[in-house]
Length: 245
Image (cartoon, rainbow, N blue to C red; front, side, top):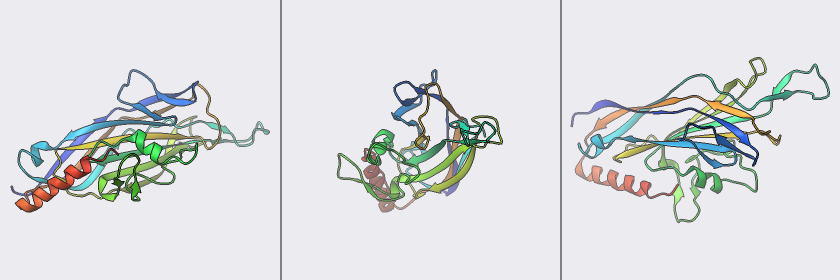
């Protein structure tokens, strides 16, 4: 196989979610792609079939770059008066969204990862860590979620800007992570999770958030390796796919 550049991509729907009377955020129909992973985390997952390269042609995919295309509009948790005792005080945002997008060789269990990273009754995951950043023991199994498990990841912190219309979210921070390791797996999994944090202030029933549709584009090189290297690559991909996380 002659080395060549190749591109894989996957579109993912956006969603609206509202705060429910049972103290949790839930996706608004008719979007059924999103699930409630826990009380303040929503997630969806899609597959990218690369078997035509890795299985049919017995090639290896070497990732080079990832691009995430989207609309700029987010609706983040709302604003409150900076000084409730002063009617003339400016507004200040009271909450943020943490949006994390992952590309992995195995289905990433968002609900399980949220549970593994919960401290007491408070679950502030993306402010402290992201999947694969630190090696961590997963529950109910003798396996470790490590750096090699996540090919690519990006986390963004989104909050309101009081100079913009109410609940118009702005991206304040973006961080990328992941191993970008070559893969001979037949599928890649794109996971998107959104966590709502209101910093101790209680959300009210009917509060809403919105996130736009995205397209995840992965660009890399298709190349044929030696038989031994390819077999070892297949073995590594198989081992990573056994992780429940």
